[in-house]
Length: 214
Ligand SMILES: *Cc1c(COP(=O)(O)O)cnc(C)c1O
Image 1 (cartoon, rainbow, N blue to C red):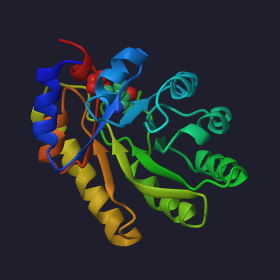
Image 2 (image 1 turned 90 degrees about the horizontal axis):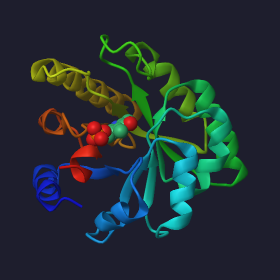
Image 3 (image 1 turned 90 degrees about the vertical axis):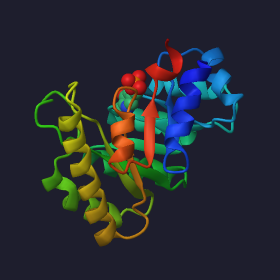
Image 4 (image 1 turned 180 degrees about the horizontal axis):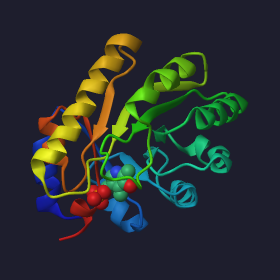
């Protein structure tokens, strides 16, 4: 672990946001160095890696899935995942519903939105698809949407990043007012932009590089 970086992240997130430590490509030892500080929320973006690490590491780790999720990997990750942050289609919601029902586990998810027009390669829903997905999931007993996940645009322009994050906050507030208090998580902010995300109202940051590299 990198203590100075960890301390500044903890100070900045404070009571406003929970810290989701992005542990993709990190070794069990690196993960345990934060586990030993009391951290429990870790995130992976590949199904195989998540399942492997979950089997090797303490059982009280709360694994979040943050990568593009292929439908044929849902069955594999469901038993070891507490939240899927990357729900990006109705078809995927239906697969999660079917697999979660099979093991009788209600699955918390975040809907992933793509709000930065310039990053065309990124996955995620557009704002215009929000209602269809949220309304659809209301009828799925084993899929529980608890909020949204958003990536900032790939740029150094802080004002542009803030613009996207403010748009995300507005979307979050709107969805919450229409779909209820269950919509409670606004996951935005990574190593390079998490402070801006916090200023814009994020209540969950996903940080990897900064916590593991000098
Ligand atoms: C890798 C990743 C992060 C963390 O990025 P860092 O720059 O390493 O902090 C956050 N969110 C998602 C979806 C990621 O894939």
